[in-house]
Amino acid sequence: MATWRDFENEAPQLAAEVKRRFQVHESHVLATIRRDGSPRVSGSEVAFHDPDLTFGSMPGARKARDLQRDGRCAIHAHPSDGDAKISGTAIELTDPAAREAAGAAPAGEDHAFRLELSAAVLTSVDQEQQLLVVEVWSPGQGVQVTKRR
Image (tube, rainbow, N blue to C red; front, side):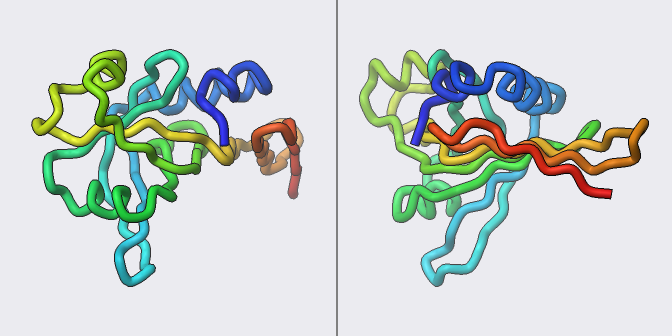
């Protein structure tokens, strides 16, 4: 697992483009795991607070309960000029200083999470060569690039 800063240090160009995709639109899709193991998708917003990517939830929301039980999740950026996806484990911020650093409201007013990244994926189209380009980063593994016709 890695922080957002770790991602930026290991793959600066890819991290910058993934971040740009998340900043183009405010709302994204968060996938969590329900109690029965099935997926749940919910709207979510993300923020970048050095060194972390953070996101929140209203008090008592089902997605927050999912993450408290099993932090594994994925966030898909609102598609603009390609897809950006990140996955990892959500860690709830309960310490007042950590919540403040992440720009979260005081405890009890909402849920705040930081994401420990396990992967980031950027999918785009090379119009000139008519190729689908998939760039995948994992901590300590560098960036793997796949091109398909």
